Structures are given as C-alpha cells and as structure tokens.
Image (cartoon, rainbow, N blue to C red; front, side, top):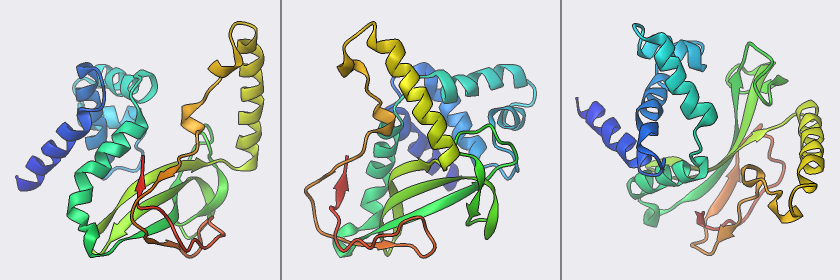
Length: 216
C-alpha cells in the first residue's frame, strides 16, 4: 500500500505539467502499463492489460496521450528531476553518467529501429537506442536528458523530411517559424562542478572532465 501511495503522489506531481486535465487518466494508465511484466508495451497490448473489458476505449485514450496530445516531454522530465532530486542528497557528492540504453524491438516501423548493438541482449539485434545524461549520487540517479539515437538510414529519412517540410512551409511563412524544439540542443546553466563518467561500451567517445550541475 505504501508503494501505491508513493506512485500516486509521483503521478500527481507529473500530471501538474501536462496542461489539460483530460490528459491525466491516459497518462497515468500508460505509465502504469509500462511497469507491467509483459513483453510488448505498445498501445494495443497496454490497453488490453490495463482495461480488458474496454479495450477499444482504452486504446483510444492511450493513443491520444502518446500520439496526439500536445504535452511537453521536457516539462515532464523536469518534473521527474524536481521530485527525485531531494532524495539524491547531492550536497554529499554527485556526478554525471552518460550512457546508452537499448530497447529490443521485433518490428521495423518504430523510429530509430535497426540492427545495432543492444546492451540488454549483449549483442547486435533489432532495437532502438537512447543516449542519456543522468545526474547521480550514492543514493541513486535521475535522467537529465534523453535523445533517441538515429542510425544512418533513419537520419537520411529525417533529412529528406526536413527538406520537404522547409519547401512546403517557406512559401507560406517566414523562415524563423521553421523550428524544431524536439531536436534543439540543451545548454547547461551555471551550477556546481561535478565529475562526468561515460559508461563503458557506450556510444560516447569523449571523456568529459567537467560538466555543469543543472540542466533546463
């Protein structure tokens, strides 16, 4: 019961940055579904497991939150940091962790899926890879930033799509409207100095001796 109460408090905190209240139920159900011990965690199986008597309606609700609802992933990640940071006791020592995480995939249509090294499987296989920056201490860690790694074939597709979007929009509006916040680089703000350690076997090739202690 204590774990359920803590999960409820955590979800309530994250829901404060979602914007419209009608996103709350779908967001909580989707988050709960991601923790289920099932192999496939796309919208359809999550709907079937979280509400087996109303799969169609639940599928629509989850899909709306994931694919159509205009909430900010950066704002949610910021809320995660706010919630976890006090428990890390950073004044007792902290450091960065740069790592990559592989997500095994059976299909080929999710963005970034390709045959590449997957840490979970310990070999090359069909997967997505996310590169992360986390702030850590002896008590635990919290992600500061995530980026999906795009293999060359996916980067080429994105490049073509961006050029097409530019051609379509440049005739109807000024160039300064062509912005993509999802791909904007984050810039650190001044804060305490911490060490930064790339994890062995990751996509990171540089060793960083310094990093700022706070990211927007």
